Image 1: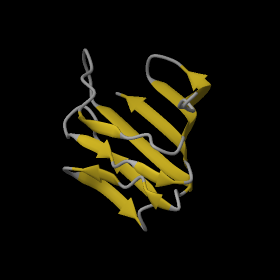
Image 2 (image 1 turned 180 degrees about the horizontal axis):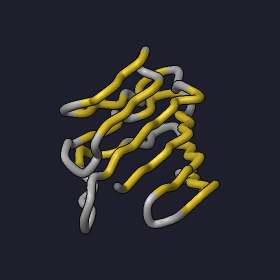
Image 3 (image 1 turned 60 degrees about the horizontal axis):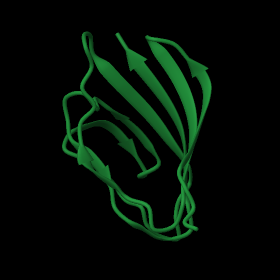
Length: 99
């Protein structure tokens, strides 16, 4: 059986959330945006574990990209994706703000 993405909510509210997310080998995230009902949506992702191969984050317009490890972006406005994880896993600490 294939491994699944695990998404553990640490904090969750309408305006702010923190999630610990693990993406296994062979997982990918297709290009998409995350619409919100109202306000502006921001995500600040910290890549805690990089895959050995693959799992590259792409965003059409990142506000901040530090060393391909820390990303601040607007998932509501700009399409983003993650390429297929060929080897290893990708672990994120994700902070989401809807203001």
